[in-house]
Length: 187
Image (cartoon, helix red, strand yellow):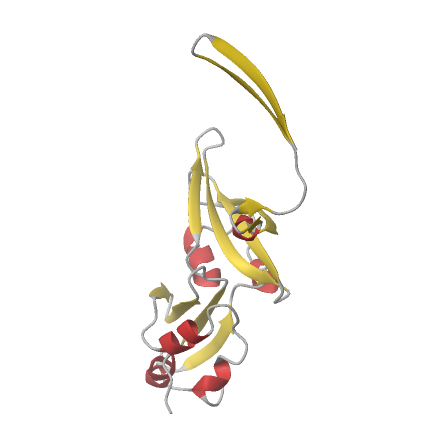
């Protein structure tokens, strides 16, 4: 039975293990691009990179995994890998890479945000640290689009449990308005 890349995504929304085996033998360098696309379906995004091109397939709703295939000028596969890994993030060079370099290295971000006071844009990428921990990598660009910093940490999406923050906590609130004020403490 032939499975499409989309079927793999739908069947493994929580775990990626076993997904590659649904396609048969692994993708190997030298395969024609038509075979790669026949196995994975059309790529979500294609990036030109000199005389090569990079095809991207994000996996799952939150794109904790993204696979990229580098295709040579002869139309054959050069490499194919999951690019949402600590090792791949480590290849991004601060003060040297620009937005296009980042896109061709780790694909499109899961989220973006602009910080007007710092005049920086952040691209955030969800990933599984060591294949286990739900993590998020943030890459910061200056106004000219150059990478100026990176940081990672826990993915805030997974800090909640059934709509409430998990674990102990406390807070203090002060409110003023409507002719009165108040102070509240919560545990």
